[in-house]
Amino acid sequence: MSDNTVATYRLYVSAWSRISDQEREDRLARSVAPDVVFRNPHKIRYGRPGVIEQIKSFQSNTSGGSFSTPGGSFRVNWVIGFGNDFLAEWQLVDASGKDSFNGYDAFTLNEEGLIKTIVLWDNTKEFRLA
Image (cartoon, rainbow, N blue to C red; front, side, top):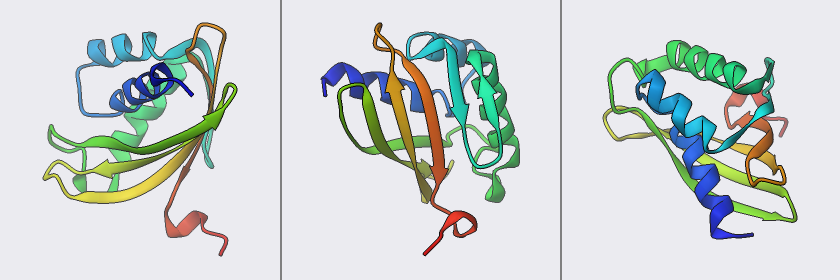
């Protein structure tokens, strides 16, 4: 795994923060393939516009007001992988700087080093099997 992989993933994760729409589009253009496929337990989204739609939906529906004011963000805890397949843990940090729930992304990169598939799991009671 290269430093470029981690940097690309961190840039993608940073697009989930409370930032301007233009900044979000710029960050996603530098980290996510145009034809990306994003999956979570609720929905499948296609392309960068689909990822943007998912981010906006998440921000408007996050409990506890984490994104009701500027400052809510995500932290990357770790990334592991081989070849073009990776697994990462992220941490939601609310607007006051307090850690909230965490989750995981399995992702793959295309030939240009952009993320082409993302499967997200949030580590909430709703999705725990054991």
